[in-house]
Length: 349
Image (cartoon, rainbow, N blue to C red):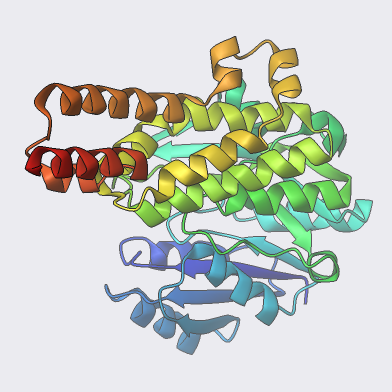
């Protein structure tokens, strides 16, 4: 079998039929489509079952809601194809011969990893032009690329991967609810050393119209993924991808990290992990890049903002002796809660 296409499915009833129809209409016919239903509650599983009844190439795996990474891992273990492709249930391929073209190039070049450029879709608008931070989403020419020159860890689904290569190197997705893709891609591409790039688009990514529901666990997992990549890139001297991950921490994800930490993290879990993430950052790499200020190198923006807000609350505590909203203080960190309790005890004496 040429290719296994792994499709994690969680409540994508709006798109799953079109997704599967698009895969099954690919001119590369010797494929299997492994749908991994991740505990859907909206009828997505039923749609996948209907496709499995109509086409023997469709296989259905069901699991409780464990996240997209766990669903993809289940697909990797069940796959039988020479190569593995990953397709999210709300995305699609640019043309009917996309998989055939990637597979042909991979076979011709004996590539462990092969893929092309990304197209994003928002409503009926397509975009293939990206800013500096997303430079790796597009290839201008076809050919071999050394990962040490590329150093990018977004949009892993544009590529197909040798199944034996993934299994032989133990390359699976970490068990995170957010940001499980970049650690997988970084390790896979680093293990391969090089990959074969196609200049043409090979994946259409649909920008979601539903905002992320940032829970404490999702933010914590996001930070775990960034920490993983900071440590790995520092250890292997991938300075550019190191700076990319730190930039995402300080700028792309600062808002949800800070708001969730201050409103929903009663145990200070996010703050503790932020400190660990900051320790994982290599100050020398960050300073040498010229992309960060001295303050950003010394402390991440989310950590600085949380400290600033806690300091303001601490000042209010000192002024008033005890802040009336005890519930709000329990959402903050141990030092502030401890100070509040101590102040309350002193007032009772």
